[in-house]
Length: 202
Image 1 (tube, rainbow, N blue to C red):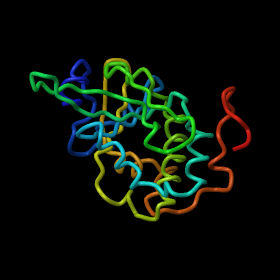
Image 2 (cartoon, helix red, strand yellow):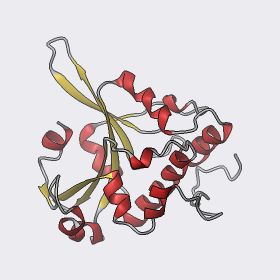
Image 3 (spheres, helix red, strand yellow):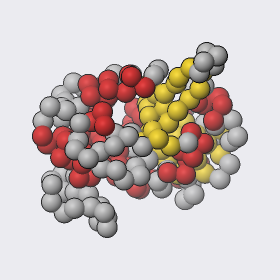
Image 4 (spheres, rainbow, N blue to C red):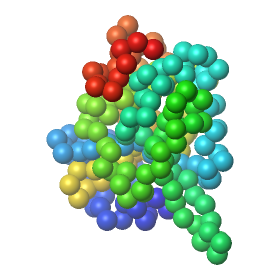
């Protein structure tokens, strides 16, 4: 529903099935492309299932989430549905990092569905975000990156859009590909980029 309704105003540069790497190459390389990661849940109550992807019991997880992701505007979203009193399905969106993570001071932040592309990052910034995200996922030791996920990477450039799964995006980007095998990052790979809102210590 999100793809068919919310992205209908764009021209697709890549099909939803097939050779994404070839079909989406133009938009992938576009200097104007803005990238977001969208994860789908059936309903709001299902958001807590995200905890299964992480070693959320550890204090390390919560401190890293609070320090690096916190309440900043990241290019990562949860989209879920609900029915009104007439049983008409509607979509809602929320910034990914919220109260479900258990990180102190993190709050839920709703966002208008149509404004999701506005929060996208250019390629290098998006890849940096994914490297940090995949590091956290790898700590769970569950191999979640090897199993199908309802995670969609969306790239928008001008009036064109391309969509691929997270697995496919990681696979076609050499910088991210090692995370599929859960290899540890370089010692400084997890250091947050300079940010006026960042606290230099946990």
